[in-house]
Image (cartoon, rainbow over all chains, first blue to last red; front, side, top):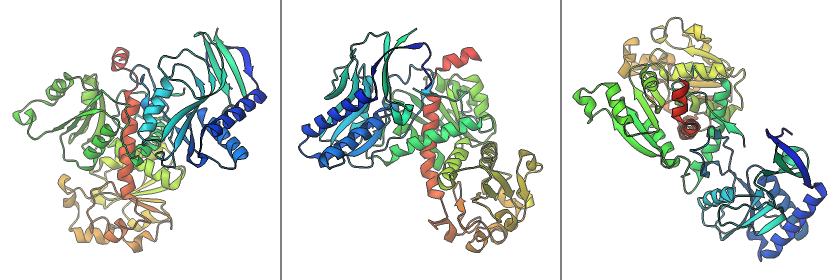
Length: 185
Length: 318
């Protein structure tokens, strides 16, 4: 894995086993909170929210016998900093192959930080129609919100300083399941 | 977050682009295409940005396509047609453009009958300039939407045999397409009556023939060009009927191409001159309407990619 420039690994806060346990627990909580699982849709935010949504859906299917619909959302075109950054972020595909209107949507992402990504995702999702409800599942909540946004399902809460950075690695993208706290060197 | 960018503030043609820049535009356009399938066809990416569409020459498809792209990205648009403006009172091109620039648009989309006009303006204005067709020189967004359509149907460019047939001499589409397709390693053959074939065009790295059957032999893509009556194309052959007899694409002729060959046309078509209605309307072979749909996606991609960075930074660099 290519490390981001100037970031050093400070501590491993989750290994593969811990991450798996967190995902299994979150899947149980999501299933428990919904009366009708056939209405459920898990939508991952690009990039690492997508495999997370798939894993949650697989776990729910294993436990409950119903596989929720899954999709992916690219929020690039909804960012609030497009005019202030130098080069454009690479645009990826949004894939929602079902009508979200009759659904309870659980947005999935790896890390919840300022809340601005989730704000953009909500705007994006609402353009696809009026879902019955939208909830939020994140593997790591690291605090430092800049908007009034909270997650309904959280894998682990990690107090961090703003000098630190959370790196979630997933097998599907990074070749390993690990979560690290990184620090600017 | 992966960053993506084009090297220039403007899109003036395909000739200055790298293959990697072309691929970036096509990949971005594939993501943009999804927006056209939504119930609410609008994203806020260019909110508060202004685009001036400066069309000095007739256009339906390209102008509407740019306008659709701009609206889907939430940009504000100003439409300028030479008729009914101060151009009729004798204002010079540069003065018109400078006056428009004083209203601080972020983009200028320009079509003009003289080659080089977009380049002239791009070098004198801070605004980002997009060439929507300059004379018989380049029409970069058309070549990019053609490439996007080919890639969707064929999945690759390497070694693909593309026959471009018709009024080569008057076509800006063909010049942009030659640069685009040869940069992507496709094999391009041009075919036209000798009176419509520019001298020495082989030097662009393409095959040349006046024999339509030879050009069609084994082709994966058959791109038909419009005979440009308004640019004097009709002087080059005796009659439309004779042109159709020699260079019109019919069912029988298309059998010479590969069985899965696709038929393209940049529009507007002259049915019964360069293409038979039977082929133009054959949904299995003709991808003409996909080209139009992809045009919007490609133009959104270009607006989005050029919107990054600040024109001031380019100005300082220059």
